[in-house]
Each structure stands twice: as structure tokens, then as C-alpha cells.
Image (cartoon, rainbow, N blue to C red; front, side, top):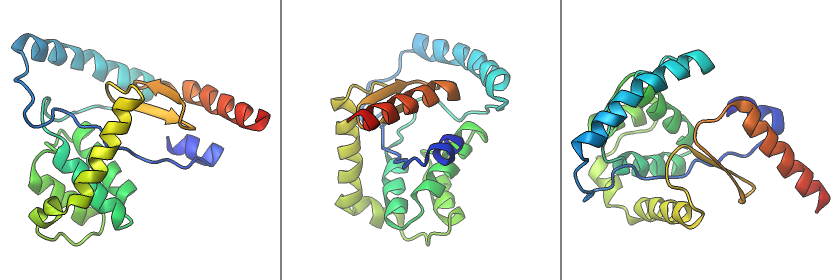
Length: 179
């Protein structure tokens, strides 16, 4: 995304999408086995296609605390840095980003004072922002991550090669020029 952002002067906004919301039913063991089996293939493909060594964290956790703290980080000018830290921690370092000590470490790593996390979680503003993002995702048909929306109307689902994103960006530019 950074390459595309520089090449096309994009303005990227990370939005919340909740994984395993609180109160979700237990994950069926057969589904967990299917996911675990697919992780090996995913790791091989990421290495072969993108040169990235995936070492992902646990499956089936509640991501809401991480999302709320991302809104806090955004409000304090460190949203992007926090987002990247959490992504790296989960996907490359196998960290459990549902754990509050890991999230406090993320805030500190991006230069934010770490107040009592309960104070942040008690602030309804951040929770409302997360809820608004999630509602927007449902409204436009997002059913999983990653999902990327260009110009508010072009949805690219899943991890895609850079060329797919370039094609969409070129289409957006052409359409905006024609309007």
C-alpha cells in the first residue's frame, strides 16, 4: 500500500472491522482445523508471491480492544504507526493482539503515553467510531478482511497483487477525469 500511496498520491484511511466480536458463538472444531490447514498454504503463498514470512498469531480472538485503541491512536496523531505495529505484531511475530499488555506496548512503541486503558475503553467516542466503521463495512458489503475501497465505490476483496490495485486506481482516475 505504501508503494501505491506514493505512486498515486493516495489518501489512505484504515477502518475498523471486528474479528470474532464478543458474544460470538464458539468456533466449530472442524472449522478451526480447516483454518489451521489453510494457514500453511497461506504462509507458503505469502513467501512465494510476496517474499513475506508469515508467523501469525492466534485464530479466533476478539479484535475490538485493538480497534478501540487504534481510534485513540488516530485521535493522537499515531493511528498509522499503531496500525502497522499491530499488523506486524500479529502477522509476523505471532503476538496475541487481544491481550491488553501487547496493546499497551503498541501505544508505547508509537510514542503515546499509556494512560489507564480502562479510561480509553470507557470513552464512548472511540467505541462509537469503531461501530460507525463496522456499520459502513456491512453497508457496502464487506464480509471479511482485507478489503479495500477506492473512491467510495470500488471494492477489492482479499489480499491481491499490486497490479490489481493499480488497475483499480487507474480506473478511478479515468472515471474522475471523465466526470
